[in-house]
Image (cartoon, rainbow, N blue to C red; front, side):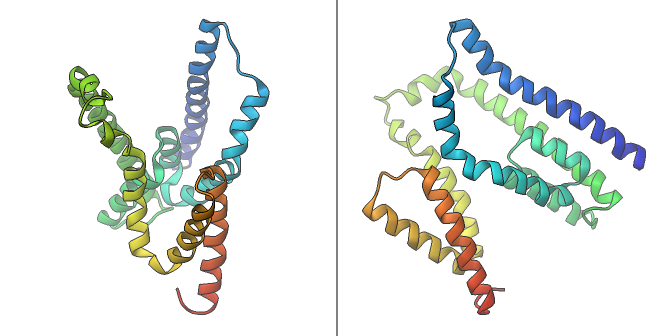
Length: 218
């Protein structure tokens, strides 16, 4: 098992680097082909709105998910993405079905296999849907199409659906951040998500801590 773990780390690091280079190569090649380059100050402004949220989250996700996903599952999950909504639930469900515990040899193997299978299935489904809808996609997304207003609400609908399940499970600790953010938007409806999300995170943490201390939540 130690030999397996060592090889997993070796190949996992290699493919993480390869994947990162592939991601960076797309904008790099586009800039090279067009003969342009982004201004550093514009990049800084763009990063400033998301860095406070995504950079700490990226570190916390590694520390939180790695013990549950195992070595192979961690590398596969972070390369393919969508860990919270797909890879983690798949791995935990597979281990529960097999009556295996995380951070064990059995859990390591089952987690890796389940995440690999879910990644393959997801890729196949996306490819089939893209090929199937490509001939009519321009008609559906055309501004004059009756379906056009629906496509403008895809992102709110997606995040709303994902958020609803968490709110239903933990409604007590969700009341305070929703109330605070709603109050802010009433007086400043144009405030960006880069500011709203950190405020919501801080309010959520403080509210949950106080409720836990008072015995409101467990």
